[in-house]
Length: 250
Length: 315
Image (cartoon, rainbow over all chains, first blue to last red; front, side, top):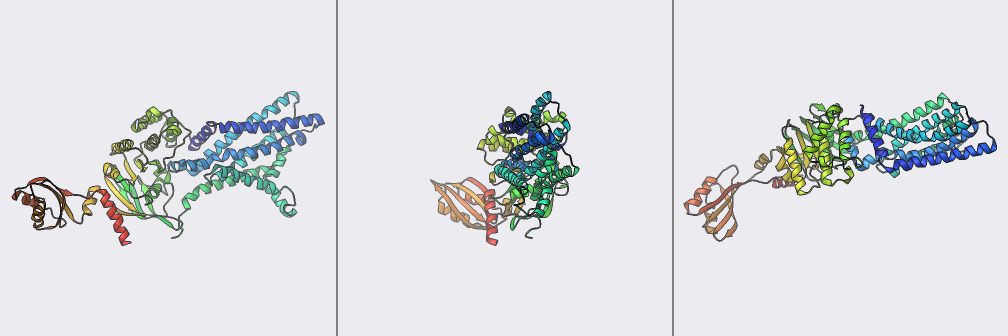
């Protein structure tokens, strides 16, 4: 059994061992379920028969907010808690590579995210019993939610590795995510030329295609790079303990 | 088993340790003694692979702690200064987790857990949450996790800090029992601890090692003046004082007590001269009775203060 998996299991035990997991899952399901229900009623009342650009787009765009609100609260403890408790020092002295620690923790948070995400398909499944809709745009939207959420998790894990305060970790993650979002809100924020560049690196605009049921490899590559970038930053942040004090003031 | 050569660690402009060099033979128990902030934990963290030194090199069981860090860490059990454990796990869950990370084969895990829990006296706490344990028990769980997998080297950073006297003596007993099985390096700022448990002592202050030797030899080495403690019955204090003061090689005599014919004196002699037989002779020949006669050795505490003080003077 690989070391990353052992760490991952401990993370999961830690999530499910406290009521925080259930509060977060409850909040997530309440929000996603509420949005799904209200959009479903809206489109039934006003007759939106083109689901990909109608119901699904709205549902997934709202799901984006739900992940944005909840996931930083999932990742905030990953490293901050260990730093606060001091258990991180124990971890450093165990025969573990930094990569194994990061992979284990990331995997733990990701599996927890899956656990929150899976029950959200219940509503659409019930809906499917009454109206057999085309599944592919729906699945495409979920792929987008999964990628977007994983990106939030990577970002949150990095911020958590910078501090020993969980509140700071969550706030910092919100800060980064909201900055990415706000920058492309409208062209008044920046000139049109800049906006075009920003749109390319905006998580939310990259997500839009998925919500509409369109899979663009460029979008997938963007998310994979975004995730890899923050995982890399996390590794660097952990390695900082090694180069701090090396060669300085010699 | 443990080698450290010229270890220096700087944090920005602050130098935590400088030129720390020592080695520890297999099976030895070595005490790292120094006041708080002397650099004990920094040295131990370098050995434990928490961070590398700025300058210098160290190895544990023949593996360089920087270049071959994983193998070095596989050979050691580490007890961190701030005993920090996952408070949301039970004792056995936590030890199970540690054992898995330390690659104790699954088939042997249950037996190994039983062994370390018994050794540290926590078997009856196996199913308690670590967060609900007293400080003493947490400390024992911390030591238990270090013992998992029977690593050849143990690094214990202040294993008895914050324990009550009974627990302290239990932990010391535990450490003494490790003798011969493991190489142990432990740090403390409590002097009797070193005398009670260690084969050798390294005295560190302000990031530098001041002395490395057995507690006994250290006291001999630092004894500039030899002193003899004498207790005589049936003598007058002034007479005893002058009688002993006349002996060749005696520099001065001090009367410590004079209690109804029982006189206690301290005789300062020239270094490296054993005048005990002469003192005995002088007392007997005057018809006094000799109650006690022993050379005085500096306690570790005095040695320590002396060394730290000398450094302050020379600095």
